[in-house]
Image (cartoon, rainbow over all chains, first blue to last red; front, side, top):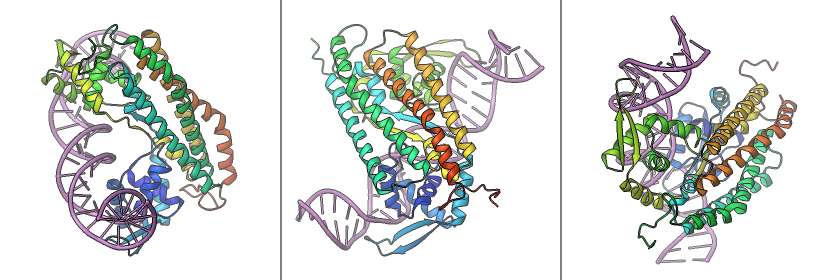
Length: 191
Length: 191
DNA sequence: ACCTGCATGTAATTAGTTACATGATTTT
DNA sequence: AAAATCATGTAACTAATTACATGCAGGT
């Protein structure tokens, strides 16, 4: 799904500035989508040019005016048309898991840190979902469904990591310097 | 993580052709990574030029020779160096979940199909993990960890979808034509 | 005084995806 | 006889990421 359609979707809930949208993406939708300023601003400008969005400009901080975008009827229609054509791809792109897959080649201490960091991210995303639920208690069924699914998935991941991390680390320690190509630090303290 | 590092990682397990690698990516690693021919072939060629990979060419089908790549010692070293610098980003990029989020604006029948399709994909990925486990029963701890985590996550997702799909569909049906901007087909049979 | 949050946008870089071109062997 | 699998590679296109440029208000 391109950033344009994403912006239409996000704005179909309520009006927002480009900045707001980015926060929403990284806070509320973070567990299944990510997008940055560099994609959002051009998308909003183009959608406004085409009449799918309208905005009210107020003097903002900095030299450029602050623009609050809202979706138009034309925009809502276009959004539905676009959504009809979207294929439901779902892909996970995880350097975290790739690193764990290669855990043999990493220092066990790093593996430990990696898991800690991931657990922190999961906690943040769970907190964001909790906050979102609290602030809009009667959300549309789709939104509630995705929130609940996200919460379940994040919980499961955290559980798994906490339950199995110890056995991973000890298996790694047991295998040190053993068969095939186990981890040997680049600075070579294996001797 | 760029395609080059990814190829080094995959080849650290066993030698393969570019074609093999693509299959491995879309079958074994599909639940957390994806990559196509257009990225793999140039990456392999560059890595071979730099001496991180070596290959044996045999006459293959088609005009170009078949090349079986294996990682060199230099390549293993480079891989570890690169892995040390990799940040453990983990992001889900899901048009599927975005579509469910917007379920209000979709025909309930489509939502149903969407869930069916996703369940099928999950089954395929679970089957791939099962197969991979069967073929290499004594895999390194990292590989087993990631396989188990993947299996757990996929199972949880499938469970959730099966358990909650009915209530989503009925909530959607109940809301038809009701408050705010619920789904109205583009061809407008709402009248 | 300095840092964080709010707020917008452009330009350059980087990387991924898709389409194209070729063709033998095996399965349906 | 057609389709799928095996197998490699290039070129064009599309899109995301990152860096840059600007600057006020409020908190520490």
